[in-house]
Length: 304
Image 1 (cartoon, one colour):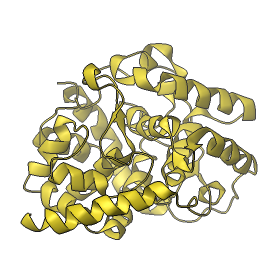
Image 2 (cartoon, one colour; image 1 turned 45 degrees about the vertical axis):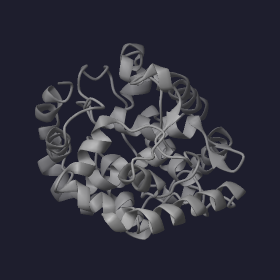
Image 3 (cartoon, rainbow, N blue to C red; image 1 turned 180 degrees about the vertical axis):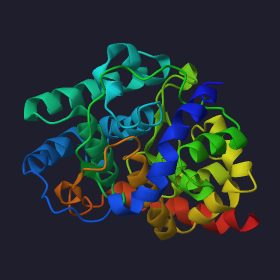
């Protein structure tokens, strides 16, 4: 399994970070450099199309997971080293990671910081996306992460939970973070359905991912999605999020913040304020999303 080596590799990240995470998220005396506000404006142009988050935003969100979970944590190695970026699980991210690396060079900031800031920005670029506490100050990687460090897309619930637990995440964290698939598309798991989304509104940050997974109406689902839904620990949490977006947002934002500091030095500066301050204007598509949610909720969710 791809995740087997990573469980041991991630263990060194967890004990110290578990105790220091709260202090890490405390306010810092230093202010966020103004350059990040400028970068934020460029990212909005990169991540938003027709008032919805686009494929670049999706890749930026996925890039956080693919950069942070391998040995070394959130160090930018995904974008810095071609041999890592060219691995099969990362090939759909190549264009976006190269764009983010170029943006880091342009503004003379760290690539690791750029990837994490971009991941937070991408979420809030999706209408309905919550704001994640976001920090800068990481050290960029000096070597690519070892291969075979990410869970396979069809990994069992038990193994997915073990992988996340090894990195300091609870079952609730996992159930919340998997919800980022609301904005996801797949390109390599099933090439006959390349570009298929995991819910009917991939440009929006909504609970339709959970709802359509439960009702088996998703355009596409990874094996791990189905396995976690069927699990006695994560399944009930995912079902609760399907009818309570506020609870999901409340769980997702701190879990994502914790993910973005894996392996990072504890000398960071809070740049949350440089992210877009308000949600993008709602589009007509969101009314369509609401109609789907209402029909699914009324017709099928009661059975669960």
